[in-house]
Image (cartoon, rainbow, N blue to C red; front, side):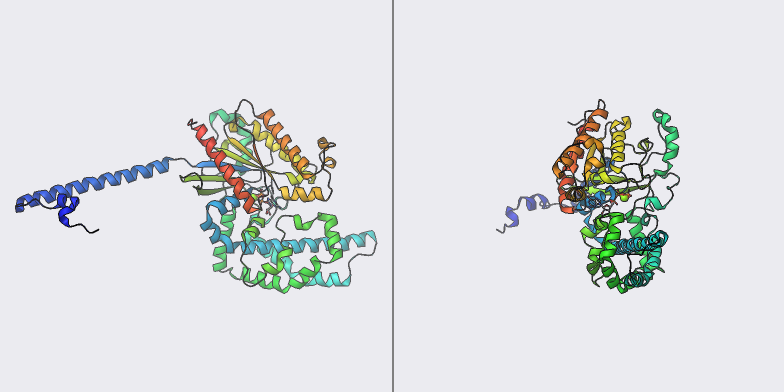
Length: 475
Ligand SMILES: Nc1nc2c(ncn2[C@@H]2O[C@H](COP(=O)(O)OP(=O)(O)OP(=O)(O)O)[C@@H](O)[C@H]2O)c(=O)[nH]1
Ligand SMILES: [Mg+2]
């Protein structure tokens, strides 16, 4: 209800005193102005102190580690979906060209297999399983060779797999990495030399590549995405017919197993991807494949669930295979390490060294991480990843014991196998953890399932924050 000035206590206080002389008025106004100035100064000081405090609050640093193709970058994409929606939305359309590149590679992989069959049949002196129909389709698909080459040039290093390129070499850069190891780490000097490659390459992360795509799409190379779309669209029927041909499928299966389960496979989505109004979905983006080279740094502000915002820096550490942990001293102040173990790889061999089983290689890397004294205060979080592919392989009857003899006569169903793998990782953790009192934390994941992964990330966030608080001695 309206109150008259007579009943308003503030109006009463602020009203000039009755009978105030002009001198008294001047004096009063000067005092009021001074009081206002002091109040403004205090406000500014509080603001500056708050800002300094915020700046002082160190970000939480998380290493993401695992062999090539284990799902490190895909895990970080999930963090971006959860905590950096704006930049995720901005990048969405740029993924289109990466997805087209993946699709073109799928087609050329099939064409390579068919070419091989032609060569082999000639050298074996037998009749090829291919017909004139195959040959004419392959002829019409030859422009896709040139398209793949152009796209590789357009997208840069990340578009070639590790086996296709020389190991990266570059001088060290800054961005949160230590310039040189401390005195206590001098024994690692030799390894450190080899670790030159573990520097942050701002030029090869997916963000840098997408920025480049954006810039090039506006500049002189702007015709590349348009030409790619036009050429691929003109080949669409041939691509679809070839992919659905029984002879081609059996040759591809004999060489690669199920091509549709390999990373960056988009042939079954060709209609959708080539439709004029196509925009990549979250699912398409997490399935797209771009290799990471060197070490990439990603920053997020995480505030969901905790009430207070906190900056996180995540390092996507690619190209790590060495069991000598030369790279460790380069990452100071790490709170947690997310380790990606692709459990579906139990029947695969390393591309770089076909004598080594991929999962056994992961066991070795995990052991190195668990036993590292430099990481002894770092909370380890294990993602037993690619469980969807593991389940499919076991359903197809692939026997774990044929590839990992220690598995022996255990049951070959998903639950038994997954639990057996978890126990192996846990045993390696316990045996190599030393005096550290950190807990064993493991999650079964399929990081291309963005919904399920969001739940895992919440648990991961809580575990990491808890570890950060414990380290600060607040618990
Ligand atoms: N089906 C399935 N695919 C996955 C999963 N995790 C990752 N992928 C796919 O596997 C491919 C490789 O994943 P990345 O995240 O690029 O692997 P990475 O560890 O970053 O590999 P590098 O950059 O070579 O070190 C991508 O095409 C992903 O979509 C998973 O849990 N299930
Ligand atoms: Mg990567």
